[in-house]
Image: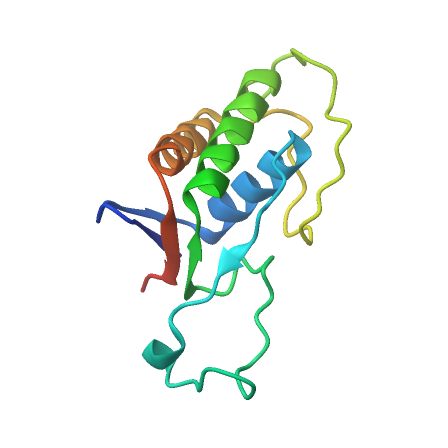
Length: 142
């Protein structure tokens, strides 16, 4: 489970598969990830400066309290909503041609070519609405 905590304190908990599907769909439908910012070094007991460990900016998966910036969050939301508008409900005929973008993120799931179930669609809408309101941190949830 992923716990997303927006800068204004709002929280959203999503399953790993929903989070990973949202990132992949967004990337396929035009999202260009700006990258995450690591949690404050002292919060994790790491040293800042030359000895600091390397941070992979495309890490949206590790749940290390990395931050997604405001602009990146809004772009993610727009692309998820674009994907939802183009992908049919599960079992329906395609509405739009498949995307022509290649995902820059490592693929965790494949976008469901047969459509999205009503439950998954609802979860992706909630996630997009959450992200549209601004930046957030990614942590784990038990």
